[in-house]
Amino acid sequence: MAEPLLTVENLAVRAGAKRLLHDVALEVCAGEIVTIVGPNGAGKSTLLKAIIGAVPTSAGAVHKRDGLRIGYTPQKLHLEKTLPMPVSRFLSLAGGLKKGARAKVLEQTGITPLRDKQMADLSGGELQRVLLARALLRKPDLLILDEPTQGLDQPAEERFYQLLAQVRQETGAAVLMVSHDLHVVMAESDRVICLNGHVCCSGVPSTVSADPAYIEMFGARAALAPYQHRHDHSHEHDHD
Image 1 (tube, rainbow, N blue to C red):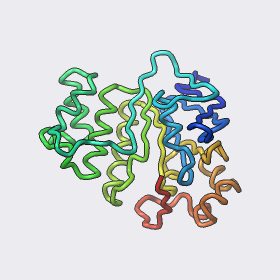
Image 2: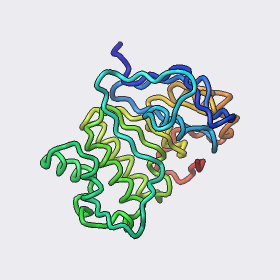
Image 3: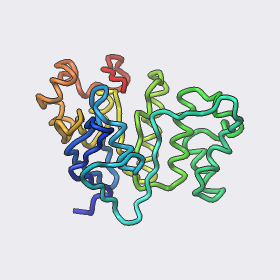
C-alpha cells in the first residue's frame, strides 16, 4: 500500500471549555475522493481548518506526506464590497504557477472570461469556480473543499461536480470534501466519513448508508436511496 497523503490520528479541538472534536481519525490516499458529512455543529469545517493548521488542536496529530501540496477552498469568503478586487488580482495573490500554466487552470475551470470581473460581483457558481482555480494554482496533491456547492442551484452544482471529476482525472489530485448533498456524496465518493464531534461511522458509501449511526443522523429516507443520480431533485440538505 502506498503511503497515505494525509493521516489524522485521535484529533481533538477545543474552544475554551467546549469540546468541538475528539478522537477523530481518518486518512486520504492518492487520487481518492473522501467526503465528510454530518449535522449542523458537527465540527466539519473545524476539522478541515485543523488539518490545514488554521485552528489549534488540543490532542492528536496530523501527518502529511513529505512535500504534500494542499489546495483549500473555504466555506465562506469574506470580501470587502467596497474594495476593488478583480478576479485576476485575487488569483495572483495565490502565487504559484507561471503564466502559461495559470492560463491553463483558468481555461480548465472556465473562468477565463471572468478575469476582469470584480470578485464582489460574481455569482455563487462563478465564485466557487474562482476559488477552485485559486486552489489549483498551487498544483495540489490534495484538494480540501469546504461545502463547495453550498448556495448553488442544481445546474450550477451539477457543473461544479463535473468540473471536479475532470480536474481529478487530469491532475490525479485527491479530494477531501465537506458536503451536505447526501445523494451526490454517496454517488461520487470513494469513502464517506460521518462526523458528529467524533467519527460515528466511515467506509465505502454502501457500508456507511446502512450504518445505524448514519440512519439515525439523516433518517431512513437517506439510507433507502443513497445512489440516486444527482439529476434527481430529492436531495437531503444539511446547512452547516
